[in-house]
Image (cartoon, rainbow, N blue to C red; front, side, top):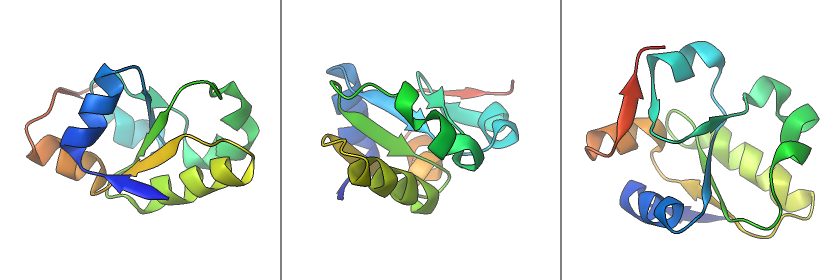
Length: 103
């Protein structure tokens, strides 16, 4: 699966990609990338069908490991436009990209 930098991930979202955060609710509530949609990894297989097949999906978690697993699951389910955000939310915030803190 292709990995993209936070900056490239943001650019793709601005062009219409959907940013999918697979962390748990409490992590998401602490801080998340602006515009991210939460589908926690713990419920991901049951909810993956909610994700559109006609848009690129940029997967994000805390550091990139869980989102890579979720992204690979989507690819295995026939999704074709899935990338992983390298470094996850930590890298996104470190890059100074728009984020939301607190629930």
